[in-house]
Amino acid sequence: MNSIQTSAFCCWNQQPLLHPPSVLQRQHYNRFATSLAASNTAGFDYDDASKHHTITIPSFLSDESDVSGVYPSLLHKIHVLPFLDQEETSRMLQIASDYAKESQSWDQQDSTRHVSYQTVDFAVEESEEMFQYMQQIDFQDRIFRLLSEEYDVDADDLSFLDLFCASYEAKQEGEEDTGRETMDQLDFHRDGSLLSFTVLLSQPEDFDGGGTIFDALTDVGNENDEQSSILKASGSIQPPNAGYATLHSGKLLHGGHLVTKGQRIVLVGFVDVDQRNMREGILSNAAKEWGRNDVREFWNQRRIKMKQKASWTISNFRYLPKKGRSCLGKCSLPASVLESIENRAQPDNIRKRRLRTEDKFLRDIMLPRTDRGEKITEDNEIGEWREVTSADIDGLMIMD
Image 1 (tube, one colour):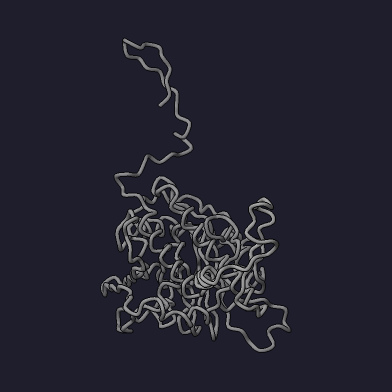
Image 2 (tube, one colour):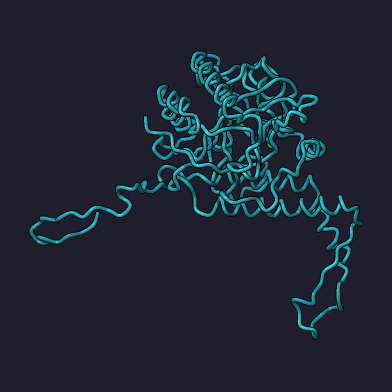
């Protein structure tokens, strides 16, 4: 197995967020969840033999005229299935717990590796024992093979951006006096990778709550039958046993659901996909729209916090010549324009735009296999010189 290569960062589109979605509290989402579309339902598929759960994100697009891909794409699917066996899971949990206790990694929030969203974790590469054990059980080959099968990407096109063990621990009275800075949840965010996974190392009975929560699943239908019982009403997915892996697109808006009792320990991986598999410009266009909504949300929250009235003004001194100004100084906006601005800043409308942009992104980002170019590697990126010996161009040196 090749060495696990990691580099640490956590942000969407590989840039710090202008205004990260962490300001959008869970109560905020629940308040407006039902306004999106009561008929939206997630797709559920369950294979009893393999214990493989598949949840399909619902469609949020009414107009598909400018969409390249079809619904549902492979990236609309979240997979929850057994990955590590009992012995492997127990061993990894023991190694992680011992290292965290020795290094105090789970006693403080990391403000260097994950700047936008401080987490309580340690990078796998920091623990030599964990690193070597994962090589011993062929962890990288196995997880890449699984991602390759479910998302139709060659395993050779996958690489780790980050791989770490995180701890979610329920808050306890008097904890602030101990100096520990634990976390019991993680706000909504998008990963810097196209694909992500979480492997549960703790036993489900060791904690209450938890799981990976997805914004797109907070208001979908759920019969809560045997097949869909892993999806809770909150929109969180909770694997039934330790050793299960949850695979999903890192660009889905997601977070760590609140742990109300005990401790939830997980192994998290951000997996990069070679650029040859993706349509150019799709990610940047989606990031721009997500960023616009972050700005709208920021100013709306700021105005509410400052208890400002619903009034906006515009100053034209800087942009218009004096002769062409429609008024002097600051001008009040017309009522119709003001209403439009206020409407775009409403939380439910912002959420709708986010989900629609997300849906379009999931459909469009991946190229069909027939349209994917050759992979550029370090060996052939520049090319190799060779001598052409054919009679008509004897002795000519060209590049492959």
